[in-house]
Structure formats: C-alpha cells, structure tokens
Amino acid sequence: MIVRNKKMFGMGIVLAISFLSVLVLIFSPVFPGGKNGLVFSDDMFNKLSKGSSYFIPKVAKSVEKVNGKALSVSINLDKIEDVENTAKLFTTAGATVEIQSTQLKIQGDLGSVLTSALTDSDAMYKNDGKFVLERYGYEEKNAMRNWWTALDKISKELKKQKLVADAKVIDDVNKKAVEPGYNFYKIDANKVVDHAGMMSGLLIFYVAYTMWWGYAIFYIFDGLGMSMKKAKVKKEA
Image (cartoon, rainbow, N blue to C red; front, side, top):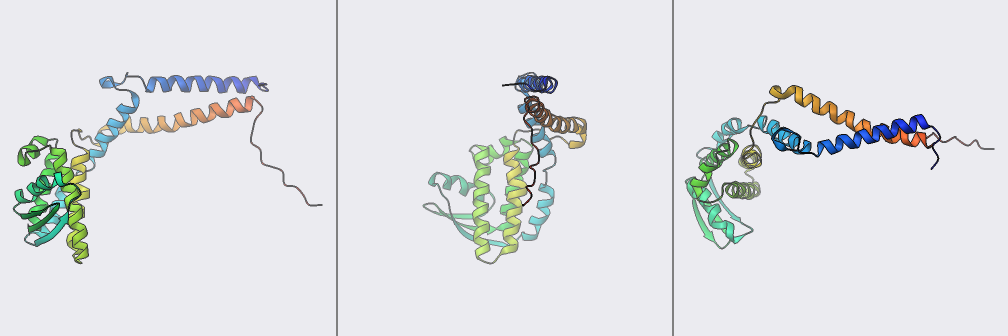
C-alpha cells in the first residue's frame, strides 16, 4: 500500500480513530442511569413519542357515536388458551359471550365494549397496570394483547357485514388507544418542548457523526491515490 498524499491520509486516519473512540464512548455505560448512549437515546425518544401519542380523549368522542349500537358477531381465536381470558374482557364490558372451542359469539353494546377497552388503555398509558390486572385476574399486557386481537377480528367481521363506519371506530380504538397503551406501558411521558435542546443536539450530532466517518474514508482513499472521477466520453471516429 503506497501513500501518495501523506497529509490527506493522515487526516483520514485521525478522523477514523476519533470516530471509533467516540463509538466506544457511545457503547459505554457512562450516560445517566448507567446506560450506554444507544439505550439512553432510545429511552428518550420513547418518552417523547409517548408524550405525543395520547389520543384517548379524542377517540372517546368517536366511540360516543356507537353508544347503544348492537354488536352481534362471532370470531375465531388462534389459541385455545386465549379463549377464557378474552371472554372476560367482553363480559366485564357487559356483553354476553358464548364459547365453542376457539369461537366466541359476542352480543352486546358496541359502545360499552369500546369504552371498556378505552378504560383499560388509559390505565396502561398511565402505567396503572394494577388496575387491569385486578379487573381481569391475569397479566395486564396479555389483556391488552387480547383486546387488540379480538377487536381486530371483530373489525374484519363487521367489514364483511358492510358495517364499515363501525369497523373504523374499532380500528381507531385499536390504533390510537390499545396500541399506545400496550407499547408505552411503564414508560414515562415527556413533552418535546421540554427537551428541545437535547433533541436538537442529538439530531445535529447524528448528522455530523455520519459525515465524520464519510470524510475519514474519503481522506484515507484520497491519500492512497484512489478517487472517483467522471469517465471520459469516448468520441466516435
């Protein structure tokens, strides 16, 4: 390997070594809470995401439109062990449930069922899993998983019945209430405005750090005499 431009090659080596040194620091547990840089930034983004994902009050207004609307549907669950626990969700919401193997025949008030799902989602969003645990007698995240699966299947059945508007309300409950309640459980919510400086710093660092490595490679190869040039266009004779 012949170095053709020592200055450029030296700059590339310095950039590469400093880049790798910072990388080692990022993976070291030197950030608040004894976390490494990736875990710390991931936790921060999760907290900020949760802080901007509270849609339950808005979804509750949509659910009001289906209060008193009759729900009569049959769904098939994938696992027999989920049947009894899923049935508890609906009976607690005031619906009646008939069980045949992995099939649930559900009859009740659609509004009451969705309001019950919102109540559980709100508790989970606020990290009050104990409320859901005591309500159904089994692990709270499993309860939310069962809610999501059952509501998703009910939505598909209602679409087959051409009840698209009702299915849309159910989908909104799943996407904007059940999912955030499940995904952000035990995560503290933070507002972006309260961490604007840190967010800006992380984004600037990400862009600069990416360019850092790019310039290191560029200078090293340029020092070795390797560069990319536009090919000359051959003229026809």
